[in-house]
Image: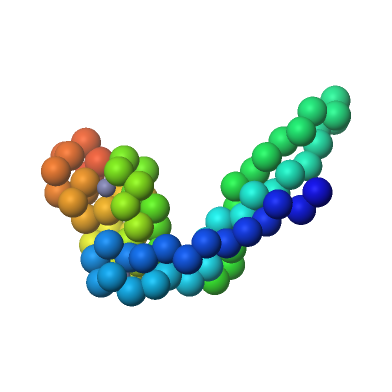
Length: 83
Ligand SMILES: [Zn+2]
Ligand SMILES: [Zn+2]
């Protein structure tokens, strides 16, 4: 079964659409249990904030490597120790 699907998200910083997304890939492990993996598509150009689920372009993010949006990055100093 192929459940892969991409949805268009809007960047919360510039209000423009993003490219790419996440695909759900379903497979089975050695014991036959279904395993669902969420895989970013190669053309993805945005992050989804780990904390508030805001969508932010890599190019609109102050710290794209932190995995969170600009607001969360500024608010929570703990995040700033990541990476
Ligand atoms: Zn943007
Ligand atoms: Zn956030």
